[in-house]
Image 1 (tube, rainbow, N blue to C red):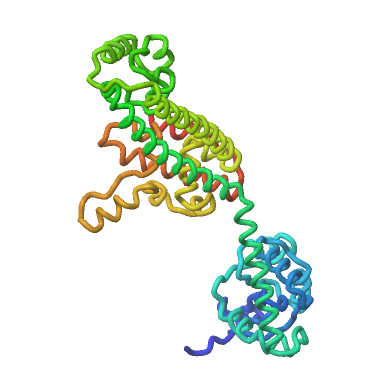
Image 2: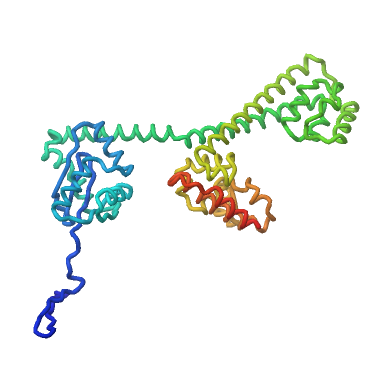
Length: 402
């Protein structure tokens, strides 16, 4: 490429030098590189111009690196940027967006972000030599020991932070709820088989596991069944009378009280588990409303908790595209469709939402996409900004439904 030269423009008796736009000097830019031993101000050519070193203490280094990753302008960052400003630099490049934004506001300078920078990689790749040269460590082995200490502390902080998030509590609670449902199904099926020896006709007439256990617990012998026992259950008066009639004419075996007692004991344990399940579900709902108020209002707290669990946490849910959210819980069906060439699923867990399952089958795909997009917005607001979108998202969903 040829050189671009300035040209003279004559206006009357005066001459002016006009410099092409491409040749006009732009404000000098520097890279602010955070490392294990300190913060460096580096020119675009890779020359280290300024530095502010950390104390050679793993705890202080780990704390500073964590604060900087969270967007805090630490003393080391502030001093390095100030020194570079005094040298005439007006624009700074960082590897993290949060810190770049914080420095821009604090120092009133231009900032940019380059997550993969050759300048930063060059400095970090030569860090062992720089640590010894600047007196941070005595030798290479001391440097590696310092590096291991800082890495261990930061890993521990990360684990503690992840475990302290209430979103992690929701994940564990939902997993317990799922295991509890499996156990209740197994135990209820066993109770039906066992008590079916005595009163087989009741199995098909009482489909609800909890009601079945309540009848076994309250009655025991089928001959003691009456209308009073069936009050408060999901059984009409006509069904109740038919069940009592079936009890009188049952084909089941007559059993002694000592044989029926363990069946009643099992029914009692099942009912205790159902009570515990309700308390656990209430706890999950309350926690979900606290951790993800927008998502809980839109999807319902229990479904919100299940989505958080399936995604692996609120952060991961917030970062998922809406298409992935739409199919959470339908992974097996999706893989099966890819393998067999069959039609892919239209929805996963969000089918539990009335907005989807109340629709005709031909409209459920569209409803799932709409709901998934709203869920993505709600989870992002909950995790990133904390902005209250409950009224807005609910209104938009109602308008879509209308």
